[in-house]
Figure: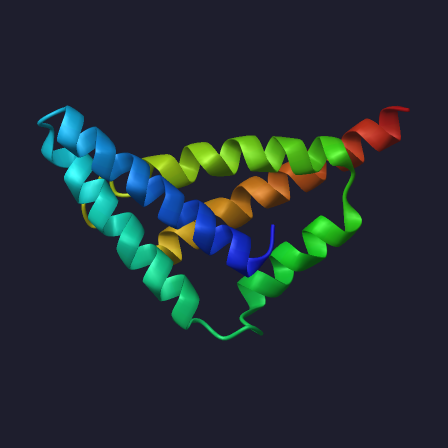
Amino acid sequence: MTRFELILEVESAADWRSRKADEYPDARNSRAAAALRRAARDLAELPDDDPRFLRMDSFFETVDEDATGCYMEESKRIIGRHGFDREDETTAELLASLLNVLQQAEVDSLDRQTEE
């Protein structure tokens, strides 16, 4: 997942949360949509050589499809929940959570390779 793809994923989640806010009168959906829009804007403003983006790039260049799949599944859940449970969630926290998932997917991939 490139930086651009991450931003698109966050924007897509913001749109989904906005639709849910229209469908269900729960303030958490509106709050999450706003947090996701802020996160997409913040991500777009970060430099291309931000170490977190470089780490993500490295991950996708070196891991197997299982690790990528695990990361993608869990990252969608994390992005979708951003700002829903806590209104003060920051973009830095979102990136940290995504990097934690990335690291766990990498470790799991190495464990599978060792077992084979």
